[in-house]
Length: 413
View 1 (cartoon, one colour):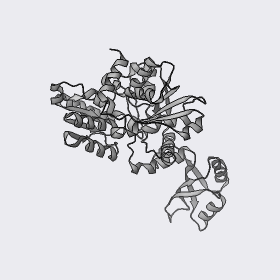
View 2: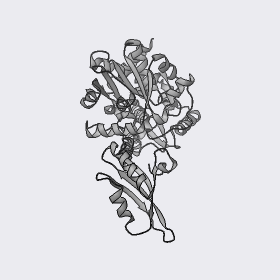
View 3: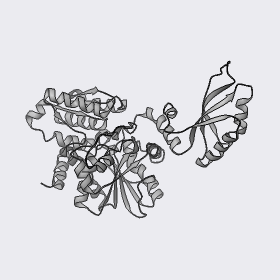
View 4: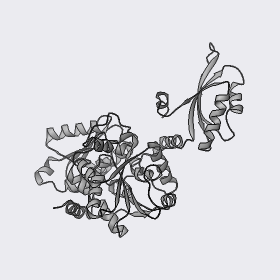
C-alpha cells in the first residue's frame, strides 16, 4: 500500500470516532494578508486537538494479545487526551505520563476522557522525562507504547486532516501552514499533500525556543536540542521523531520559526476578535502569517489551529509576553536619591502623558544616599519608547533598561 492508501485506511478507521472539524474563513487574517485565510479547527476535535487521529489509528490496529497487555504513552497533554479517549473507546487499559509543565487543565481532561481505564502519572520536568518513564513502564509490563509522533501509524492518522481540508474546500489550497512539535502532523499531512497535490506549498512552523525540526534538517537527522523553551508546551520537543523526519525532509516542506511573543499576540487576537480559545501550539500557524510566512494576495491559505487546551490561569503571562513583544511594556532599574520629591520629579520630567507605571518596587535604606527601584512602564504606542528613553538618558537619575533575554529579565517573566 502507498502512503496515501494508508491515510485513506486511517480515515475509515476514524469514521464515527473523530469529528470532521470545521474549515472556517477568517476575516481578520484575510484582511491582514490580502489572501483567503481559512482555519482548520482541530481545537474542536475530541480532546480539543488533532491528536486523537493518530492515537486511535494506532490502537485500533492492535491484536488481542497487545490489547490485553495495555497501552502507555508520554504526552505534553494533547496526545494523552487522544490516547485516553481511544483507550476508553476500545476498552484498552492505558497509562499516560505527562511532565510537570503540563497545564492542570490538560491533566484534568486526560483523567476525564480516560475514565477508569486510564491512569495519569506526572513524571519529570520535560516531555523527555515523561517519555523515558513511559518506555520503562512498557519494558516492565509489555504494554504497547503509543508515540505522540514517532510511529508511522500515528503519522498516517494525523494525515487524515488533509483529506478533510480538500473535501471541505473543494480544491487544493495554495498554501497549508502546519504547527510542528515532534513532526508527526507535518510528516502525515505534508507527505499526503506532496503526493496528491504537489503544487500546494507546505510550511511547518516551530516555536523559536524549540526549533527541533529545523535543527534536524540542518544535521540531516534528528538531534537533541541543548535547551528548550517550554512555554509552547504542546510543541516543546527536544528531538523530533525518527519515523517522521525523512517524510518531512522528502515532502519539500518549508520550515520557519515564530516567536513566543507573536504566538501570545495571536492567541489574544483569536480570543478577543474571533472568539477562539487557542493554546500556544494551536496559535503557531496563524501567528506565523504576521512574522515569518509571506503569502500572496488572493492565495488560498489554510492554517491548522491544532489545539484549544489552554489553562485560563496562563492568560496573565500571555498578555505580558504579548505587550513586551509589541514593544508596549518595558522594565527599568531606577536609582533614586533618598530625598523628598525624587519620585515626583521622575513622574513629571521623565514619564510622558500616556506612560503608565504598572510595577514599582522600592525599599528605602536609611544608610544609603540612593535606592534602586524596579519600575515597569506600559506605553501607548511602540513609537513612544524612543522619546521615553531619551528623557531617561537626559535625566540626572541613573536608569538601566532591563532588556528581554537578560538574566535580570528572567526574574520578571
